[in-house]
Image (cartoon, rainbow, N blue to C red):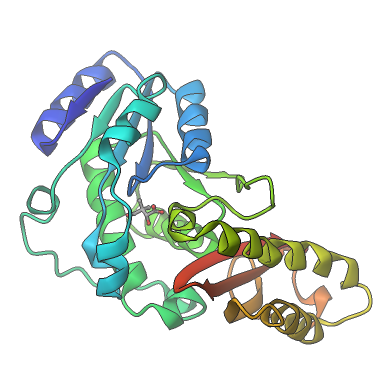
Amino acid sequence: MDKYTLKKEISKKIYEQKKQNKKIGFVPTMGALHNGHLSLIKKCKAENDICVVSIFVNPTQFNDKNDLEKYPRTLNADLEKIQNFCDFVFVPDENEIYDTPDNRVFDFGNLDKVMEGKHRAGHFKGVAQVVSLLFDIITPDKAYFGKKDFQQLAIIKKLVKDYNYNIDIIPCDIIREESGLAMSSRNERLNPELRKNASEIYKTLKKSLDYINIKDPEQLTKYVINTINKNSDITVEYYDIVDDNTLKPIKKWDESKNITGCIAAYTGGVRLIDNIKYK
Ligand code: PAF
């Protein structure tokens, strides 16, 4: 695995590979890598000639300074975990990524106005900004994103369409801990008891599948929020049942062919997200 910190160096290396008709796969990350990331990286390696991973904690996507400061940074352990699957790892610093002012205005329509977008002002602008800058540097054929960040995935697909990137976006299944808790770098900030309790989030989402024939989406939303909030350590920020493409909340199950329930909840001051597919 070769490590690069400068864009011109990794771009040059990738250009040489592309001249030999090598296919480039890319997994952007913010580090603190867990088995969820590793599953993306392994898939990327299996499906491409060259697997590129970036590790960059992107400040522009954090609306909460405290969250940015507390975001786990474990570079040495990360490099060790990926060395057998990754060909080039890109570890730039902030000045390298943001070396020129970026005044682009992104328009995602409804996609960034709801759920995460509503509760984390500017978050998706920051994500779109860094992902497009990374796409320009890495020029991948395929890029891999986890389905846990369901709304992020919808926004990246729109970014690729609007900016005419010739990149296949590959959605990857959520990887869960044994308890059912969706793997996340933020889980590291939970003590063992909170971590155990946090599995109630997915347990409730899974249980809600049993009720889709007897409850409408609004009733099911209330069921999920009330059940999870009964746990004194967890507070639901939102639970929205939405159309997969528009991310608009749905009122009747027959309104859409593709429906997902998306949740954000706090436990021990840590914000967790997850989702479940109804249809
Ligand atoms: O999903 C993430 O880890 C980040 O949002 C991403 C895509 C690496 C951009 O910083």
